[in-house]
Length: 356
Ligand SMILES: C[S@@+](CC[C@H](N)C(=O)[O-])C[C@H]1O[C@@H](n2cnc3c(N)ncnc32)[C@H](O)[C@@H]1O
Image (cartoon, rainbow, N blue to C red; front, top):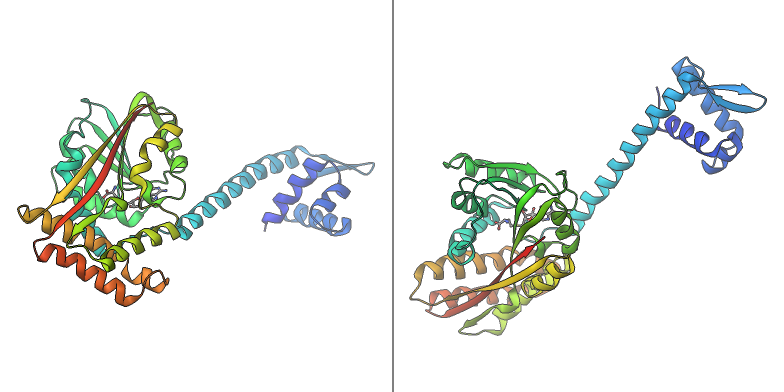
């Protein structure tokens, strides 16, 4: 059977121009290399080379083998790069994970903060929108409903999340969304394809947000806009205050950093968009202030969005030695106490828009 080593052998002989040089590069003796060549010709039952005065000259069939083999080697190299990228994504693992609790938290978060984030998420009729890192479709359903004439493509690296997102949209009246599994670091869309791009709570999880913004800019049309929404955990304060609650929040920030992300990314949106070459950048901080006069936000934001997020990383933060189990438990209990005892809570999201 033809093996990878045969393709490589022919590629190296072709590139080096002689058996001795090829043997050197492949770290083989010349006789071992000749043996492999003979073996290949026996398998193929064709001559790959004419041997003329110690020189190897490709036969017509040999040229075909070489060219076909070169395209397979190229694809193998691409496959290797792609697998390395996937591995890198797993190493810089996504802090919140893909559990059922996190799926529900994303839905709670999106519906709770929709008024703050999306009152101005409207684009011109008939335009093509890319939602980058759509997760389980929590924001997708809002922007799709707000923009029924726009054609939305929503992508995420997680096939599990895309399956959830498809289920969610299938149970609604929304007809203007299609989902795809895609890596934002390397999209399969052509240059200048989308009129607008929307990214929400994604860059905070990536080790290289500029790489993603640059790739998104590539697929954005000239004069198109990018909208980025991110949180910033450094903007969190609450009453009654508590040292352990602050430590629990700091533990989440530290864990996210260890996993390659930045939970305080909101404050860096302007410089990030600027470094990426976007124009007319406008950053709009969206502060959520909660007290007991807003019971929906007490439940939806303090309990189900923010504290649920800290609770979601409890095990990992403790197991990685970032915080002790006691402190984490007490901190989470104190965050719930803010909600239960009529306390107050403040958090700021940042929404940035830039033009290509
Ligand atoms: C916190 S979730 C936010 C999901 C959604 N935007 C929302 O607000 O509900 C972050 C999402 O970014 C996705 N993500 C992270 N890195 C990615 C990458 N390189 N390519 C595509 N998706 C990525 C994760 O799989 C995850 O679904």
